[in-house]
Image 1: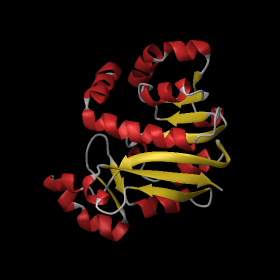
Image 2: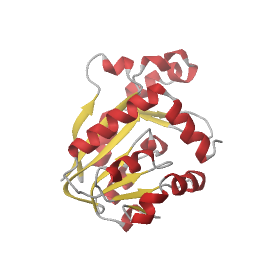
Image 3: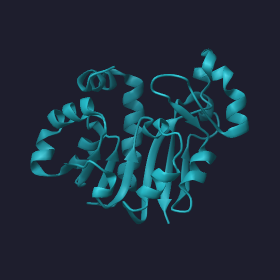
Image 4: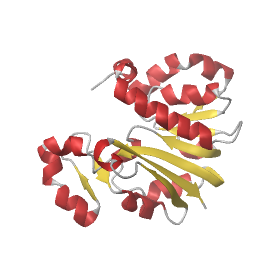
Length: 209
């Protein structure tokens, strides 16, 4: 189990993770209207949230892990003091233009139906949810037995879970899109083409209907 500080330092020290984060942040900031409020769902230690607040967005953060929250309060103390960042115990405590969920936060859910229903009360009509999820087709995982053992589950059902303490779930985009309806429609999906084999993460953008 990582402490918040250990996780924070690991993420900042990983060139691959930094590149993924930069791509995600750029997409989120390009989509956000100037001054729009955003909820960082599963905010971790506040790395993304700090960037959103610096760009002029009132940023709400929701993070269920006490260890992550403890470090977030240290790392983002200036933003919290200035009230450009606000921690919320529940997503329902805010109303925003967008919700972001980076680095596989949604892969911790077995089903997303109730989550998207809840987020429909948080996101303004016309707003969006942007999520970074584990790419179930990433061939870099093919070296692991659990990936090979679940290929048929992925093709037949569109999802599977790995038997582990964290119980991480893998989903095809169509399964997540189906769970998002009727509140959200899948508007953008990245990667494309050969990227499905080479990119460990997929970005899904959902529009609030």
